[in-house]
Image (cartoon, rainbow, N blue to C red; front, side, top):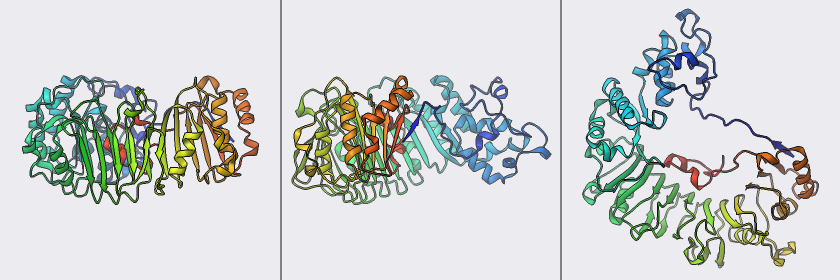
Amino acid sequence: MEARGPIPKRTKFTAPKIQEVLPSREALEAPGHGPPPSAHNQQPPPGAGEDEGSADRISNLPDTILGEIVSRLPTNQGARTQILAPRWRHIWSSAPLTIDCEGLPADNEVLAGIVSRTVSTHPPPCHRFCVPSCFLGDRASTVDKWLRTPALDNLQELEFWFKPYYRPQPLQHPPPSSMFRFSATLCVATIGNCNLPDSTVQGLHFPLLKQLGLELVSISECSLHSLIASCPAVECLLISHGFGFCCLRINSLTLRSFAVKNYRKGNDQLKELVVENAPCLQSLLHLDFDYGLHISVVSAPKLETLGCLSDGFYISKPDDLSRFVFGSTVIQGLRVDRLTTVVHAVKNLAVNMKILSLDTIIELMRCFPCLEKIYIESESKKEKNVRGRKHRNLTKCPNIRLKTIVFECYEGIKSDIEFASFFVLNATVLELMKLQIRARDYNEQFLAEQRRKLQLVNKASRGARFHFTTDKCARGVWDVHHVRDLDLTDPFVC
């Protein structure tokens, strides 16, 4: 039995220990260097700013390794490495260029100036180029000029990302033709806030592209299928707020992860998704609660991760809920309408429930008998846990194979306790149950009371661990922002 209290958020860093050589707060606050990074409390290592003879260990690494480290840093931090010591001054200019505007000033005018100066002075190659998609409409000629600079030759990652707080413009602007001069070298691409006409899509071919994101893009159904087919190596596909097509049929021999979300209801938006032939598909994510989408899975033998099944967020009409069809088995919202064949491949499932219901979860376990992980979030705590008499006799319950149960928004009320204790007492192979609680409830009195009411001393699985935490336990549908978020074995794990 373990409990964990509030802890600061950990900063993700691609280069181990690179924080050890970040400049001091005073250096970063000097004019021209912008705001300090989140690791501003880190002190510079011995030797930073001194002569070469007292350089730290990391500075003794070869230039090629240092350049690789710097190229993986956020743009602002990579540029700041020039002020660490004389040893570092030439590293950033000789390292592969990474321009990621998500970590730079929010003012578009300032941002455009930074990008223009950088691409005009930094030599090739460029690993990643990421700017706001609104620039395609506001600064089309400037973007075209950037894309044609030699600094971006052989670009591997191109992203026009959509700002969530930015009001979308009418999707009338096609992207500049220069965007597609990297088609032979791109491995990651996100196209956003533009119109992709049929004439633009025809003839495109991306032989190396593994991750494709389409965000707030208008494209015809025919061109969408053509675009996906032009990416023979694609593994991750995100379609967010798309227009101009109502049906999408997935036929890909390489696709591993697919996610879809919509901006609003509309006659020209996706209504039907058919997974016809996806032999490598492992993850299928529907990232919306407030409109219905019909999803049919014809052939996806390796599909292990499914989400998010929901009984609605804003929707009140049952007929408007999303519908999943596996062969002749039908799931409407969270209700299993017809169970004729079970789906053995699915092991990870995320659900969002307006009303916490044990009966609903048990029916889903019957549909997915090999389920090992389940992520549960319940919106309403005013309703009682819906638990019918038919599941009180344990001989009627399915063989519970769950190893991990994640319960978001656990408040310790009667319905929560009844729900969680069922698995405490009956899940014989359970390894971990994580319960997210409110910060005000994180005290020994509350925890002791919950341990007693959940009957942890009578747990069915001897090795089971139970974590009470104030941290977020799972990544929800609102946490998937980029196609790179799909490149995870389990997209829900924090």
